[in-house]
Length: 307
Image 1 (cartoon, rainbow, N blue to C red):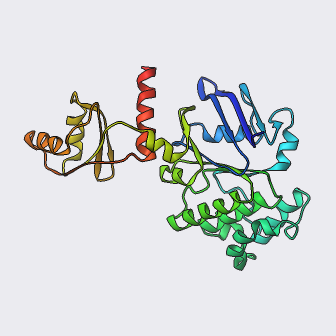
Image 2: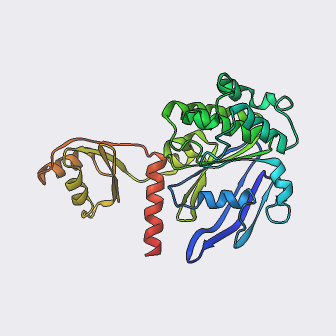
Image 3: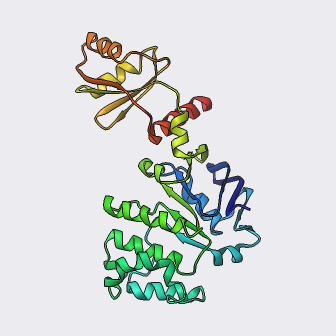
């Protein structure tokens, strides 16, 4: 039995289809990432799995319990950390943690071992009001509150949004430690660079799962020729490349353009071609794809199928 089982889940808001036939499982002790931009349907799915929303179609089970029929059982066995900080800002760190332990019929002392590694980082501020904490400290407190009743499954909805880079790294280190305690973790994020920190990922866009696999396997399976091009005329070069027969897609990535071609080309051939057309090109190199490259390529293909 998987910790989370999702079968053909769909959900609409009026005429907007937020989730479209979603299927995946999360195993015990697995860190599964749901990767996609804002509006992709991640939060809607989380609300269904945490029994806060009912799907229009399909079924889902969490720790073997149906999310509709057995919602009370599920609520005792899961921890949920929503994207927006939702603890009591006028209570102290210690008071928030005590409150959440009490409503689940436990105490901080009883399950302290589970939160110890996280809580010791905020313990010096235990008398401070939660509303006065920094973003990273709020994040750690919210995670402690989600764990204090010793859940079997942890739901984290965009937990690192708006948090500084150091706090983001610390947070993911904490998740790796929790995974070793056999807790199933479903985390959503819009940050593609966090995908590689998960055991498996599901790429989601406009309510549809584009692909599910291990991050490294996704990158290994990508066989299309991919090039990074650096130029001082990014916009004009982008527009030109989009009109060429050899181009499958081209998108801006920071100071580079990432070009996918229909067949493999010599990097020097691309550079000479662009220079002959009057573009200033300082670098052309063949590169390996990132998860973001794969996501955008799959999104493009999905759009093409719809059209």
